[in-house]
Image 1 (cartoon, helix red, strand yellow):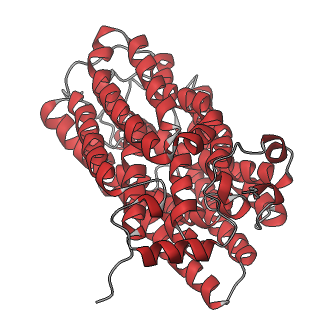
Image 2 (cartoon, rainbow, N blue to C red):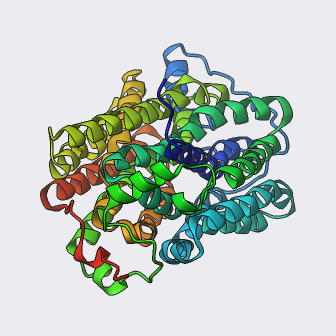
Length: 463
């Protein structure tokens, strides 16, 4: 049996790093439903509209009992919105310097120490919520600042450890974020139902601490610095990269980056992908609970987790196919990026619009599953494109586009609150989902028509 190259374990650590980082981001999305009292929309008495229509058909009013998950805080929609988007405000603040700092300090130190601090802060969210909602919001903001350093650091590891023809497969490891939903939502749900919502925070902190321990022993900034990797593998990685990846640390050419057409097209493509994605992971639990009428166990079951599991599978399989086609010469990098953008942006946009018009129909579940699943092909489009353009400054470049991507993380809760400000009903939510579908499609179309998929001149570092 052929021995796995050591760089495979670096990809595994990137996968679980994305997992733990994203667990910090989305645990509040589910826990906030158990932490707060539901707010009734006018004329609906807090009964989900789809359940209301069913009860009207049978001329009976369905009684809705509020489950006991522990202390429920009487927070307004505004406070809940700030609690959800405070992470993204922190993410926005930290994004611009994150890649440059990670390139100077090294991804190993950044990932280890920032994950460790985040684990402690996440556990402190529980007493903070009891003390004052503003303290809870501040801690979530701080976690967001630290979280923004993770994905640029992963991109630096990918640039240093991956041969060019394995970049798609390496980048697919960043889809570990979906596993955070697949596994954590059922776990958080079970712990919340049996022990209270506070355990949803504690379990995520425990996972982070465990990750830090394993990461410390297995990872390093460069292959040649790792005592566990063979000299043959180090030589292979360095020779395959030729002169495109330098070991020398140097500040990125910021002016060249922000004045390049390729950067702005990638930024818009990345924003479109995240806008649609955040609508599905941030707003979907609220919509399914308060409008469709699903309970916490249903949201953390197949309907909640299957789309994310599908997304991981699609990402890994399609990345392997793309790398294989590139190695065999069956397709160019440019052709692969354009074709896969149809699956990462155009089709998910159409699925989001389909979800918007399906209302209470069970077909909505199909749109969720297909739309979020095929979006996993973004590892071959906006996620890997930073490696195409500038592997030497992949961290800085991803930090920059994450800044604009972070704006979508703030816009999504704000737009959600705007659309349902007067009524928490089906029509209002449909208009909200339309916006995500349209942005998905337009940003993907721009990337297909005008995207750049070759190394930029400003990637060069003079040794």
